[in-house]
Amino acid sequence: KAGVTQTPRYLIKTRGQQVTLSCSPISGHRSVSWYQQTPGQGLQFLFEYFSETQRNKGNFPGRFSGRQFSNSRSEMNVSTLELGDSALYLCASSFELAGGPHNEQFFGPGTRLTVL
Amino acid sequence: GEDVEQSLFLSVREGDSSVINCTYTDSSSTYLYWYKQEPGAGLQLLTYIFSNMDMKQDQRLTVLLNKKDKHLSLRIADTQTGDSAIYFCAAPADGGATNKLIFGTGTLLAVQP
Image 1 (cartoon, each protein chain N blue to C red):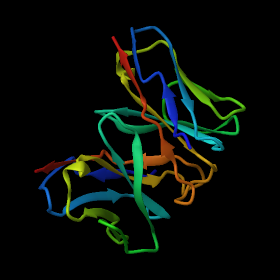
Image 2: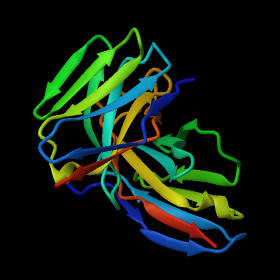
Image 3: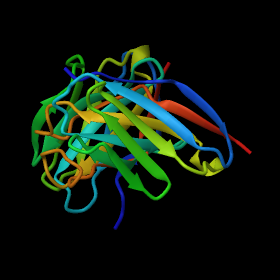
C-alpha cells in the first residue's frame, strides 16, 4: 500500500507570492492533517480535514488555508508569503477522525518551502 | 491547553541505553505517543502508551509513564547508529476527539560508534 505522498518536495518562492502544496493520503484514509515544522517553533498544527470538511484549525493567520477533495486528497495554500513561512510542511493521514492509537496517523515526507 | 516539553539533545555510545524524557501538562491525556524523524523524512510512530499504564515494552523500546509528575520517558536498549534521529513525544490536544497532536520540541539523539 502506497504511503502518504506530498508534492512538490521542495519549493522556492519569493516574498509576496502564493503557494499551493498537495497531499495524497493513503488509500481509504479520510482524515488529513497539516503541520508546519520550523527550528524555532517546532511542529505546529495547521488544520485537519475529514470528508471534505475542516474539523480543526490551529493558530495561524488567514493567509493559511486548505481544502480537501472528494477523493480525500488535500491542498494547503499560503498567500502573500513571508520569510517566516519558510518551513517543512508535513501532512498526515488516518482512517478516522477520532484520535487514538487504534487510528494511527501516517506522515508524508513533507514539502520544504523556502521563501526568499 | 496541552503543553509538551523535551530536552534538546542526547549523545550516547553505540550499545549503550538511551533515555529520552518528556513532560506534559494536561493530566486528562488518555494516551501519549513517541515519534521518530530521520533526516529528510516525515514522522514515524514508534510506540504509544495509555494513561492507565505505567510501563510498556516493545522490543528494544520501553516507555515509562509517571502520571503524578506528568513525566514520560522512552528508553532505547542497545542503541545503534541507525537510531540516530529526532524523537518527539506527543499528546492529543483535545482528548482525542480529533487527530490534532501537540508535539514536544524534539530530542536529537546522536549515537557515536
